[in-house]
Image 1 (cartoon, rainbow, N blue to C red):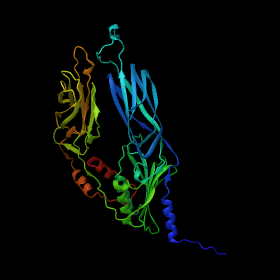
Image 2 (image 1 turned 135 degrees about the vertical axis):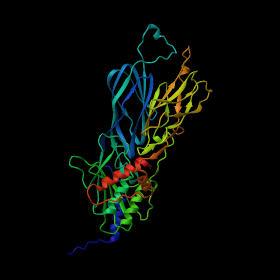
Image 3 (image 1 turned 30 degrees about the vertical axis):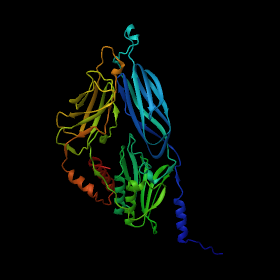
Image 4 (image 1 turned 120 degrees about the vertical axis):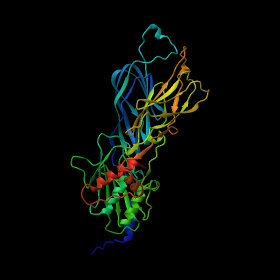
Length: 468
């Protein structure tokens, strides 16, 4: 008896649709580490924040913080996670500390380390309870701080790109290893890969390889583009999954213009958020999104600085402008603050830029309600580079009775605090940036490594001159 195979096109379409409707589940969780900067303070009361980021669609479980500490005398440590107290202890001498952090959903999370130091009694009179606030003469260090966590991604979804492939905010000691697979003789595929990858930014650099990773390095994720041998009437097939626990983005097309349209869809943030699935067909003729816009830095918030409280101490800020800027005048601006009543005669705030006095404001004799105030600052000289050190000091003068109200409080509003650095673009950069902003195009040949070079050039131009 002869068996006849039924291969009707409509059956293939039904099977493909059924497969696309199934979610792609992650097969295994992975252990990871996030490291933090060291903390050192000689102030009586200090709040130091640490931040970490959980990628879109991901969850961190079994999170544990570890650190080494050193202090000269009894020090109280409180830790808040997203404004909720999760840990408190007393430190003395040197040792290690560790504590658990609640499971965290996608997004940024904050750890506030509240450190209060106590000086040893110097005389019997010092044991008496008074309102006087004496300075401490000791230093507390927290070093080699990190959190170890189990990263869990229950379902891979296209809308979570690029986080579904890598965490764009994590700081790693070694670069990510990304592998792109495509037809090296097809310049359109190489160009579309370059467009897609150059639009993604990462705090940790990504080292790109074509076809395969080196023998001594394991790939962190794959991106594959392939041309279908048969027609795809519904558009370009885009799907994300994890094979052998390695995230993989696959793009399959039948016509070059459809591939261009699919890349446009993946680059359009608003459109991408609608792709709440692991796989789908992207339609033809999706419009090209804006590649980048000229970067505008007008406030401290534009430099990535969030509002902060200035205690009876100093706050050091690092202002980093694009490296391709050439300053033509001094750095200047205005500090906006909200001052709480309770500051006495002689209290003031002072700002310094690169070690030079830049501005000050008296904060004494305020009304009973919080007051919005501003003061100007000016750097002393025109800088040769685009990195500046800004220091803010909050000086409080107390009266003879050492009243506790002398502490007061002061907040810096970074969205209202302005920065102005007159500049021009360095030689050779202006033409490149203008052409990229309007028509980002780089010629790529079939030689190995050409795509990686094009990606590096495009990402550098976008990072230094433009902003997403």
